[in-house]
Length: 363
Ligand code: F6P
Image (cartoon, rainbow, N blue to C red; front, side):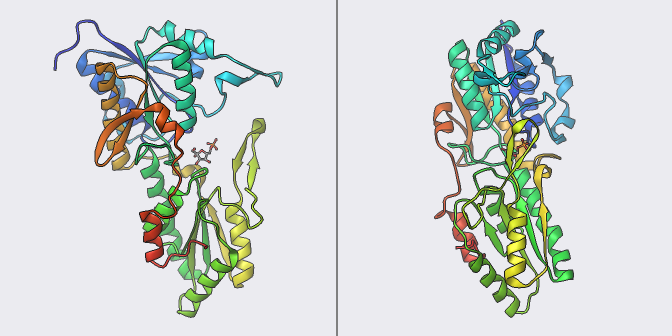
């Protein structure tokens, strides 16, 4: 492959919650860009690297992205899921629009285009920055929640599902040994993709997702039936955004006033113990789903997305997000991807599969 006469200089940043496969996507872009004779600059800690002065970014060479990176969880560039630059929290409690600082920082870097690896929130912010600053942007979808529109798969989802499935594999023998009902709370924000997919793969008896309303009576009846049929243990998977019977989202308050989902697993565990007169134990899987080695599929998707992103820059096609559809990498307008929130389709194939397998969805 021949290099271009004037080396292009492109920037990449990872933004939002981390997930497995981010390093593989960085590697994909750097490897392909190097073949074209282009330079890639990695911006540190999402847009935060462009807020600080001096800006925090570094040139990434082929030597920096050896095959070890394929196997590494997290992101070598760092990331952030706080601090919307259009309403940036200041130490005195007020907010400030610091978007121009970021845009100036990007200009200082001297890159011709930015590749932003993020979920819906990050891509919306980056797109607004790109429009305001007049710089070309390509988006790459990543999120364990798999809730971005226009792509069947986002980087990180497959690994998170594998981790949750493995958790069920490990919970099943101990549940059977002690005749217990095991409740596994998984992430996913407002979408139940992780719970549904891992629940089916891991042989759950009950799967609760925010898209399908449940009653505790239905769950208890299902567990009683399992027992009547001679099995004294059961596995329940519950997605973190499932509400209580009273319609409340259970949240935890964190440092800096942040709120995150947390508590529904313990709520379901306690209610089921009471209704079924059974021992329950609750596992909250949490960030284990985001860390660790990426699955083969996430490594593949990440590198394919990285290569396609560089190709889009080559073609001068901007404001696009790379996507996976029908066994192919395609690209779609970023605006369309972030406009459509992809929750679980209650009539979709996986819900039908779960029902066909006799899994209780609580309804
Ligand atoms: O969006 C990814 C995600 O892992 C969600 O599934 C989860 O609700 C949230 O991020 C957790 O955020 P944090 O890392 O800030 O605790």
